[in-house]
Length: 322
Length: 278
Image (cartoon, rainbow over all chains, first blue to last red):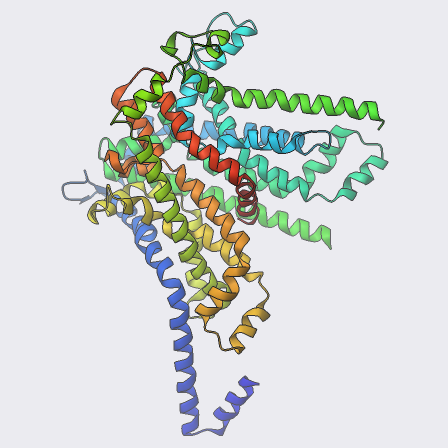
């Protein structure tokens, strides 16, 4: 109705058209001002503390700068130096290796635990859920202290318990180059598995009961039901958890840094630790920024792939429900 | 399935869960007992560990040690996490309101710009953020622990998603009653959004509570440290006997555990909500 009224006025022509146009512009301006009043704080903080650093970081990555003196433009030579730095590559590979180790094991453990808690035969579900989830709320420095102690070869809890089961020689969990990432993965499963488990539990609630009933009539046993019904029905949750874990694992830093300091002899130095050392111990801001940009690009690629896959799954699910 | 088979299955599954729960609790329980022992380095026997004599010396030492300001750090962690949570809720929900209900010039461009932040890992801007904070003279202030987290794109997106689900008629009806947008935001949208406010609140609070890298870089003054930064600082300064860092860790864990036991229902809901929508 309002629309018609305006167009009629426009058609009526002359000065009234100008007036209505002005009125509309004023109204639009007022609407914009109102909307921007809602957006102002967000974009003020976002501009200053996110977007500006992103641009600044790129400029610094093209410079030679020790944070106190003057910046000199050096083009892409920081990136070049990175590519030739074997420590950069080993740190990069360490983070990648951790992704390969942590993502499947955390997914598997959290899924298994969720099934266990969700099972109709399990008593005291709430207790088990809280127990398995609880480490998530502990901060990284606390779990670092707890696990540094647990990993101690002579007095740590792990070896002490294994001794009860016949371990004769102590295992050097974090000082053995071959074992250090296994140990970090173990503690990361223990620490973070709860989040994925909660997501899986939520996913399990959403599977309609009639899916299982049909399978039961067909005589499928427990494992077959998990394999043929539960796992495929959760494809969206699997994907979500997998990508959450991939990006989180690639950015691994705190627990490794606090427990091993990157050792033994750099075997557990992660990409973030490399950035930290170059930037905040050697104050080579240019190279640290270049390494940060490489981290950013890797995470960006992972996220783009994730969006593609999530979209496809959504489309397929849409097809099925039709 | 008959009764016997059911009982058997129940025992099997609950038994497995109990065993796993023991394994899960082992590192914490073990540490807990160690914190009540003298010269804990020497103990490598489970029986000796759990049996008396116990001592409170580790705790007394930590509580009397000026370098181990556990309560101050816990206070800082609570303060910073609470302020960031409140800021995120206010700042991001208002912006989300605009994206969900209002029309304005540049809407889609601004939305894409905000989406960009969703992909950007915070770790990738550590260096320029440090430089910025240094230039603003904000290093070693609460500001450096708060400001970078206020504009949280993921919170904006989840708020918007929730707001879009609110029936538009409510918005239009309030408009016809002569309500301005701010009034609608306050008295129509916010009261309907309690679940999403709680979910985001808990998610942000936990994230800031556990945040490590940025506080570790930006805070070097002991009295401004949060728990994640303070504990490693205490250990690195002293390299004390093992009982002390463990006692310190236990003291720092206690308040979180208590909060967790009270709020776990909400925490679990919050993670489900943000995970599934996000």
